[in-house]
Image 1 (tube, rainbow over the protein chains, first blue to last red):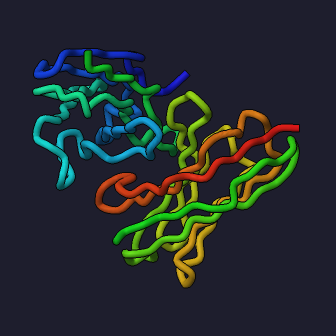
Image 2: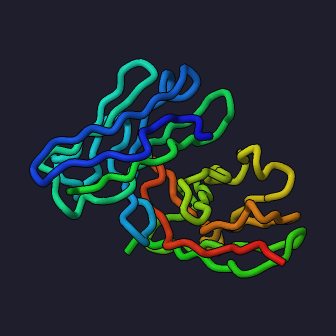
Length: 110
Length: 117
């Protein structure tokens, strides 16, 4: 059971906009920034969004993040086949003194 | 090129020990906090441990506390994870990951640990 809660799956057709939610608590998302990671099949995770809504250089602006209270979300617009991957949210947890991850969301591009 | 390369994984019997290493290159290793993150087969990411740039601050996940020890050698640009009393549930790909101004912004390709008799 992950500390952060994500839907196990999401899907969309090319060109659509999809969102992935991440729910936490006051000790993690409520008091720290949220980060998102993309893991393509068979590869290591890659930082996609940091500090709730910042994109590292090289990440397309089709990817955006937001946070409100103890929840966060990742939005992907103009969905492309290469976006098919697992997506994880993460945050520092002040009570656990630990990085906590969501269980991951498998995105399928139909 | 900024790079992290893990090594030391393998097959070990339950109760056994293993030491993982992570070699860093392309950046000033001593300036960065480092982490170990693992992924069991077909499962999600699980954070394992954190160490500050100087090594003075260390945190562990409850699942490995008392069994795993994280350390670093800044002179050798290397991060380590000593794993003792290994259990079947420790079977996973172990990644080292850098934490700088951006969290977990660089990851290695991982090394596989299998705990089985």
